[in-house]
Image 1 (cartoon, rainbow over the protein chains, first blue to last red):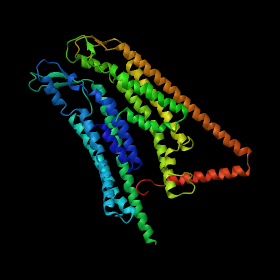
Image 2 (image 1 turned 30 degrees about the vertical axis):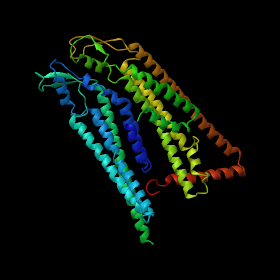
Image 3 (image 1 turned 90 degrees about the vertical axis):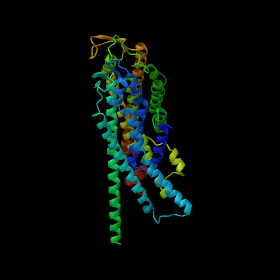
Image 4 (image 1 turned 60 degrees about the vertical axis):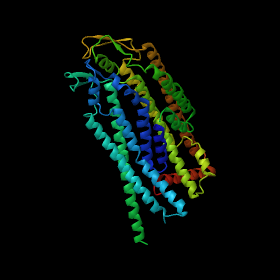
Length: 219
Length: 262
């Protein structure tokens, strides 16, 4: 079980997406997933080993690391990627459910394609709202947990068993900061794509309804 | 998700590229991505662990390492490769969009559609002309820009392409100017120069491809102008009429809304 599973899932959703949805999938694959696997993971690999405090007191380093990094950046990043991709499953389930029902009853359940598409459209819109929601939640979580997106070189720690305020040094802070900013930028780009897709679909739906009503009136 | 997936995505673009484009893609995968994964990652694998400073002061090593390597070579190369491969996706998306339109035309039973079945549409290779030419040329332009930007960033960040053996560091909390020793500097220099050389080859290939496309474009334009001037016979009138009709059809196909209403 690895990122390949997520990749297969998103490829499956590609079929039912709009053009903007496909751009979103490409951005997630290339600028988030690939960057995570190919570059970011290695930066945080030995973060605990390379976290150094100016003290010999056993346990002090562990306690300070745990205090400043309750959940590591890289784990939050991975969780964000998983949560943001999961709403697309709703669309896949909906399509599978419809096809299953049609097979079981051996007939077309909906009188028109429009009615069926209406249900799928609802599911798609819900998945878009959930995706955007998760993105925003994780960005806020990052901001709140780490006081912004900066990674300092030095943190001062005075938790027991540290005997006084000790200096602790984080490894590769600049590189971590660069990749955090990259993560935030791609997150924001994905939020913008989701919101544009949402407005586009809602706008199209209302135009279609208005046109139908207009045609019916004149018939 | 790894470099193999990128290979699958870009492999599809290969069919619609020019010969120079195909050479560029091969150079990218064999001399850059493969070298990065198979060799370079091992060379830089132990970089902070084996970065040693002549001091026992805790924290000095971390701070000095961060000062001299704000972003590791390996990560910069990975980002460069990702950014340089991305413009080819524009071409892939454009081709996919055209295929989608042709499939819809075919399904509607359009007489103008000249394909026998869906499989032929899937296998068809589009010529680089019209709007695809513009997409393809813009993708090459963006590739060039990204390559140049990353090469400059490298040069700027590391003061050239050499990896020194010894660096002198006096950032706090180092008590004074300490000597810090980089691990495997010669091997790292060799790989850096290799990657820069291959980058330059890729830049040259892109420039050559750009010139080739521009030359073809201007030749085609002058041929058309020449044809319109000197040959005003019935056959050409029919040809231009057919071209206009084809343009009208393709325009109307492109204006149709895709998505849930299809």
